[in-house]
Image 1 (spheres, helix red, strand yellow):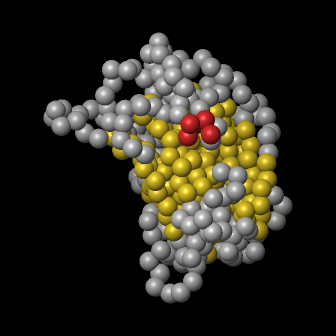
Image 2 (cartoon, helix red, strand yellow; image 1 turned 90 degrees about the vertical axis):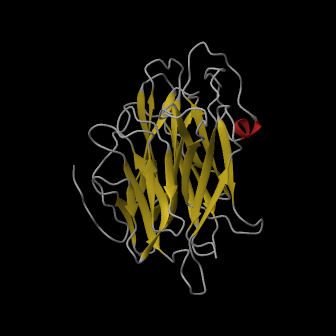
Length: 321
């Protein structure tokens, strides 16, 4: 592993994600106006097949630098994990991993949120060994997020700091060997707690109702209708409610996040979580929210399971005020 550092449009990296052998280039670019920066969204999708592990890279345009990223699984249906969103100076690599019994075709989609490279400081910070939190330098603020998980480990949370200081990755259990890695895309700006007058960081959050159904989808909106859309960071968090009747609750590792995706105009982020699919448990199409955001999934967890849980979606903007 290596750790290289450069400022400007920099990166500090100790992990990399291998690109898939067969990738279908599906790119899209959209201008997102903002008060302090103009953001551009670039998207790419992997091959749609039954390959068990695949990656795809979304790349910024010429003269642009990455300020945020997102990713999702298409047609995972509870059988494919979102395993990594790894940002770099000008691109992001998103990886998906299917469970061994997942036989349906699927793909992974990456979104790169980019801004003109105007020479202001930008750096991608990586969580140090033994930590799950990537922290921005004190003179920079969080703009985008990312993570990389060991093989077979599902994502339970990617939580941006409320003040804009960094981001933490969560899993339901501690894997043996290499642990999860968090990435923070840090840019010039002011933290939420800054006491001056001007633009600053803002974290938005939306939590789903409590329930047992899967999938669960939340849409994180900007705060005001007339607010210029410039959301650049994504995140999510699963909360499993304890059963008062069970004094020794087991860890729940079969509920995981499989989508954290900014929309096409920069005004909202869609976050989806799903229960691990169980073959033969029945099928029912997800709700209108899932279908409307291209996140339609099949509910195949055992109907007798009464675990109560929620998913919280996060989005960030480093120049909201």
